Length: 305
Image 1 (tube, helix red, strand yellow):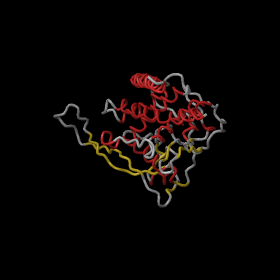
Image 2 (cartoon, helix red, strand yellow; image 1 turned 90 degrees about the vertical axis):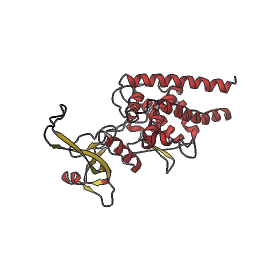
Image 3 (cartoon, helix red, strand yellow; image 1 turned 45 degrees about the vertical axis):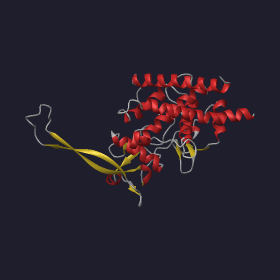
Image 4 (cartoon, one colour; image 1 turned 120 degrees about the horizontal axis):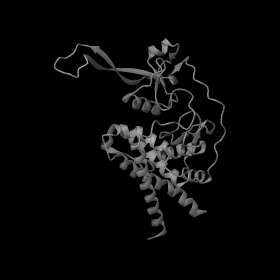
């Protein structure tokens, strides 16, 4: 067996081990995810209503996440046109709303033939909400004092640099935008880490997550999920990106073991795909392909050195 084949086999063994550890962590109820950087407003990850301060739930969470991703909103705060008016804010002319579903409850009396009937009926209603980024007159909380640059990890910097990916900093969201083919990262100043990730580990784990998204662009791996995942393809891609980040973090020794942060993030997307018990294995296979693709950049750079 060639040295290259042996190296690839070793990587695959590591990927299999990490996948098993992630599944075990998820099954052990890892808890809720935390962002490793400070956002300017709103609850971490969860979209909230500006007027009631309540978190949105159910399918509305995914719907608003997708809307924020597509439209580039940096705030997790939403409200209807009327609700924004009630708190003294004004939706800007020409702004497009995002759909949500709420349930209206009616008292109709008990059904004597149904022991479980509570006498209420719930009817789904559609509503439309606007993000805080779409309104004037709403004060966004200022960010705390900057924490300064994160501690550098030379191997990770070299790995990322070898890909040639365009990376920009600013705002309070991390994302890969296919239309401009660039990765957007929050400023290093805003990374604060989590209970189980240092500031530097949180920064690089986030960057490697977005770099895995970058690998799936049409002119690279052209990662697609076909009919199997349908409208859940976005959730499937998030699974791939986070598993890919876990693989690369282990390879680059950014984290020495599978951290709860990865499992926490994966668990929320697996919930969206819970009808497919093999989803995580499909995502792990795609993540392995992405990691191998990204590794080839640094392998070539090292060979040319």
